[in-house]
Amino acid sequence: MGTIISLLNHKGGVGKTTSTINIGAGLVELGKKVLLIDLDPQANLTLSLGIPRQKITIYEALRGEGELQPYTAKPNMDVITSSLDLSGAEMELINEAGREYILRELFDTVIDQYDYILLDCPPSLGLLTLNALTSSRYVLIPLQTEFLALQGLAKIKQVIDKVKFRLNKNLDIGGVIATMYDARRVLNRDVVETIHKYFGEKVFKTYIRDNVALAEAPAQRKDIFAYQPRSSGAEDYLSLAKEVLMRVEGAVIA
Image (cartoon, rainbow, N blue to C red; front, side):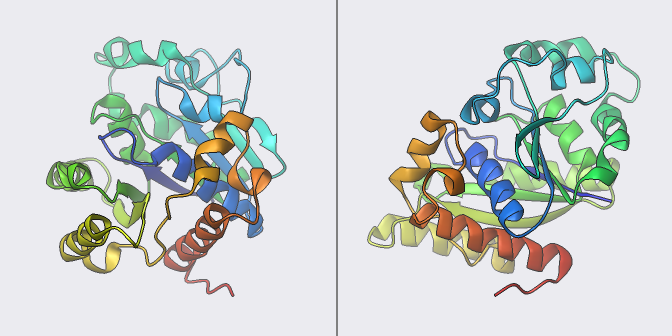
């Protein structure tokens, strides 16, 4: 049975979609079969991998118009695509009975086909995010190493704790990912120190360095390993994927 992991931050521009794609691709490099779920109405994950509009996206599946239909982005990495239509889903599903569990029920048909399912959550704490958290075993929090990124950390933790208490007893914070890090900047180092004080051992040892290849890869409709496998971005995300495996499976990979 696959392990479901949400990547969540209600602040945009922190590297959430980049991390979802490249942790997924890193896990593929390590021999895992991965499904990525684009749960953001902006569909940035879908666009970043150059996937054309599908007949059944996550929006249609949530509305009960069809089962999840994975699109193969590359061997061992499939994607459930999104579209702008998803922006109306929260209003449309608000009166549904058990609305927080709709996504979890959809996973019944695919969970045994994958080692990992990664959810790229929208930059909000609404119904779509609640569905993701209710479905997940772990939450990863990408956090840009800038001052403003620290604002709202308490709110994120509060939401996760409430979901764990009321909807999903198995939910845990799997780790915090420091993104866009430059060791030469005092501010970046100070922010990482603050994150460590707040989250302790939950912070991943691998920091995702500021790397132009990570910004260029979506324009080429590729993950970092397909675009520039020798870049520092590829090196960092492979290291991070190994840490994820170590935390989830207890697997130590050289």
